[in-house]
Amino acid sequence: MEEEYYSSSFPMAKPTKIMRTSIFLFLQNFQHFTSTPTLLAVPFAVSILLSQPLIASSPLFPLIHGRLRSLLVAADFPPSLGLFAILNLKLSQTILSFLFALPFTLSFLLLSKASTITTLFHKNAIFSWISIHNPLLITQSCNSIVVLSANATCFCVLLVFFNSSDVLGLSSPRTLLLLSATGAIIYSIILANAYVVCNLSLIVSGIEKRGGANAILKACLLVRGRTATALSLAVPMNMALAAVEALFQYRVVRAYNRGIGLDCYIVLEAMLVAYMYGALIVLDTIVGSVFLKSCRTDFYRQIEIQERDYEKCFLGKEKKLELVM
Image 1 (cartoon, helix red, strand yellow):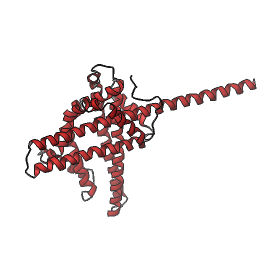
Image 2 (cartoon, helix red, strand yellow):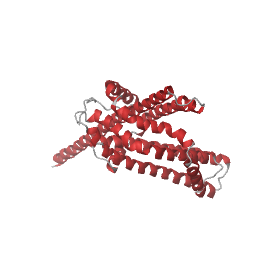
Image 3 (cartoon, helix red, strand yellow):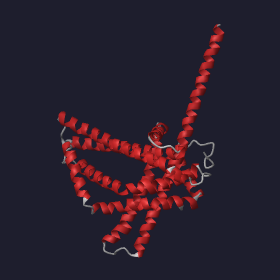
């Protein structure tokens, strides 16, 4: 494994240091990262950016929205609750967006990540970024199961909350509002942790060229005790991606809805925004790689410290036995 991009004196625990190092790596190979990996991510970026306006006009949206509403009502969620409407709307949009972007996720997004990981860890390997696509594909399939399980867990927790409040007679508006806020926080924490683990598992599978559940388990092991740092890195990257999505809605979708039409300037502006989105995806992969390197360094250092303490303890016991003898 090639590690010329990393100093032997890593570990970096602070998110600011990890972010600065990631930006430095991005700028150090600016011409490469803004060419092949970013261009590979552009089709996925276009699918994500177009998914929001297409979902609103899709005939499948009312169908999925109604099905989810019936499911939530059958699970005894209070229909009059604000969280009920928000959860139903967001889940419907997420499902349609996921289905719309799935072919681009399994192809262009994974190829972009593979190209970025190859530059960071397998620079001397020729066309190795194509060879690690299959491990990434297997890991991404397992990640979908993890995200689905995380959502199911959140539903179970919310269901227990609201059913327990009915049994205990705590059905006042303030109590339901408090339960809704608590449920929203728990939902966000579980999904954020699932996102971090899934993102790291793709990098692990790209480095080791082996995909599947083992990559997810290794990512869970490495991120243990470093969740706060991982979330501190994930939040600004997701905010940047959300800002680009908002820019696309404001500059492209808004102009189209006002009847201006798709002239060449709007198309070029849309492609530029999609290119910005792809560059952020590449930067996010670099941030995850640097964070993973820091986690592995800390992990192995902890093992060395434990082995050293064990040897000291063992040698101390031997000396005591010699004195007794």
